[in-house]
Length: 444
Image (cartoon, rainbow, N blue to C red; front, top):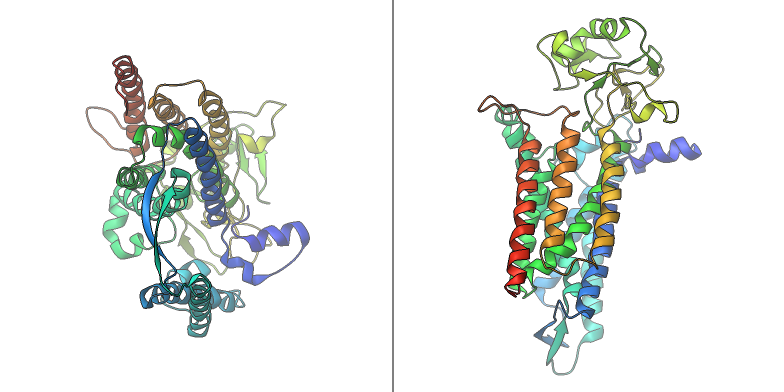
């Protein structure tokens, strides 16, 4: 596992650059996912624009004005915040004992770094506006195409996606939230995909309607875009080991060296008993003695520990069906031998690597949607197919993932299973509805 870029370069090249510890692997892949989404969405918008499905909007702007005090203040504030935290984090990273995740979300930082970056952004904004300044500002009418607005959409998706993911995660883990509301709201961990999807989607639809972009064509373009973005984001989950893994694979165990080995006889049960404190109380020994809570995935008894037995076929590597996430970013598990410092834990029993399954599934589904996008002519149908694909994919993976369950009418579904069912149902209804509307020649 590579919790941050420090571990990547240290493992690959032997470099030990402490400053890179501030760049967490999951965050890097989230950034890559947004960049990928922006590229795919821009390309699809341009295709629809050429086919006349999306139109430009004329807007009047004033050119030649110098930078306003408000623009300079905003740039200065943004620069100060980034400089305060990032420069401070680089300086703090010289200490191997500091928790950089906690540092980023604390009030600590570098005032000098904030002032430096803030002043730099103010200067750059002033210089940019000064180059465009005219003796007399002019009013101009320009055409703005939907693909020109992708940057705004990405920012909306980022902001509202994070808010939604955080809110839904706390709703899913209500007991944990009640114990420490502020801590859980501002914690760097704990995000729910569907929460982000719903809130980001609502914000982007509002923005599109405000800017005169036809919503159904927007959604059709977003179908393959969100599928590939989700696949890339899941790479971050798998590489960092963020805790979003499946149930235990009882065909294997983790041995004393931290390696995954095939279980023999009662090995799985013996391993449960050996690490009983971990499985029943979520606690594991520390390097200095005593126990510390490392996970919230606990069971009432050892018989209740969720698991399935599946031995890897000869043509597959074992890690594809049983992986113990050594050095995971959550620091979940028991201590690895001969490991010092942060991220020195490994799961005492390997699990099904569900993020990897979602990477493969979503990449395949993206290719299917990308191939269908030119063939499907009815607006809204491609997005409806996306809803079905993402709902079925997530529902299936939930069968081997550990998540909070709800109980009603004799059923115990997880939040993701409930939303998956709704998405599939919405997709089926959408296909029927949009096909019927198309026959009536109603344009959306």
